[in-house]
Length: 156
Length: 195
Image (cartoon, rainbow over all chains, first blue to last red; front, side, top):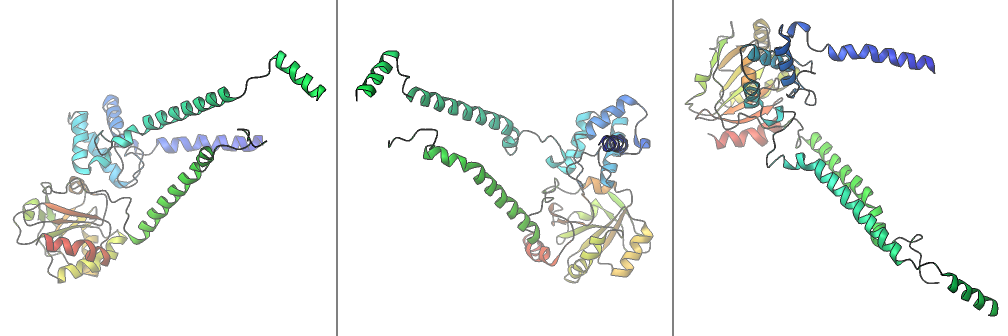
């Protein structure tokens, strides 16, 4: 058992660098502030080939090209908005991992609030019904009533 | 004793509530089955997101010709003021679906549909060998070895085909190989519509 745990730990330790190493270190910008900006932007952009990965996480060719474009634009002095607009103009809303709030996406964005509100309403309704049921239960017999019942039972 | 205690027999409305999770699961199952069916028949495509360029002209670009193909290169200027709608097809010799769709491109060319090719991220010699082997249906071929023009088009990958109307506006994008079904169901009506 302990051995299996050690093997698991070893596997996890070996797996982590693989995740972080996607993207050749040579791709990274020299300037750490610019690189941090590029990575932050890249994490907002969907890799259109693998779809549920951002371009920072993906090993696809297209993702690598987009990473390079993001870095080129940032080095050339483009603002974050300009870089995002460049990609959005070409790939549409779908490229944004956080889609903009619009009429078409409002249900998507409102879903957590709807689910939470709905759950709270359900709990409220259940508690109210339980309270109503408790109110309908006959009250316990008083000492006087119990004595009378005993008397009736005894005397027939 | 005809009165039931609340604990032993829930009211009919509450018993209905017990079936709710089952109902949700059945509905979700039916939904997923529908998606799977659609994937098989081709009616549903999870990657079928419309191009951001639909209804817009293609980006400005100039691509050099493919040496040895005896066709001119391709530029955005070639996609303006056309006599009839054209197809721009991105292809690569290393892409297996491109081989699969190639007979349909040849067929379209025989029908007189102007086809313009972009060799995407491919060594010119390999593109040339590909066209020698399978035939060249293209009137013009542009070489996009770095794949940067393709990104301006919002390309996902190869093969990908765009329909450009006579006024030079992108009207349709097909990401993936052309098939007989796509030709009949999508392309033919579109070519008629924008003729």
